[in-house]
Image (tube, rainbow, N blue to C red; front, side, top):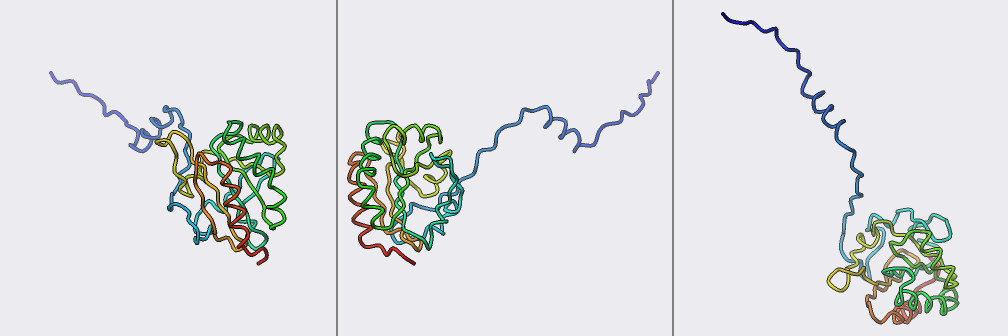
Length: 196
């Protein structure tokens, strides 16, 4: 004797997939960073997509590097970690020479992946007169192609001088000679036009 079964109503495939997705925990999305290439002297920052990104400063403000185009040159120094010996030495040397940078018409920014609170504490402890920028997830560092040092274990130490037209006029990388970053930036600023 044969038993007849009533047809089972099945949900469409798309709703079964939705039910499976709903049961899975949500995973935070990691921002995608497109690395163009290492930023070099002679290149324009506008060719790098995160040049327009809004970044948080140690002063609680939000800035975009692109907002300085046409106004004044900028000096960007990327340092590995706030409150470490080498980074403190570099930041303090930029502090000690800050009046020379402002006399040349430049804005100075230190940049690391430290939180705004850590950067604020670092700036306060060392009386830094310029803002420190938080590069969350090292997006700007990756966009500019800054290579890590010591087999990639330590974020690279890199300094850029950007002219008033948004063109990189100096790129300097040296993990160990931290004070030389200041000397190289001042030399480059001497050749930079201040107004657009």
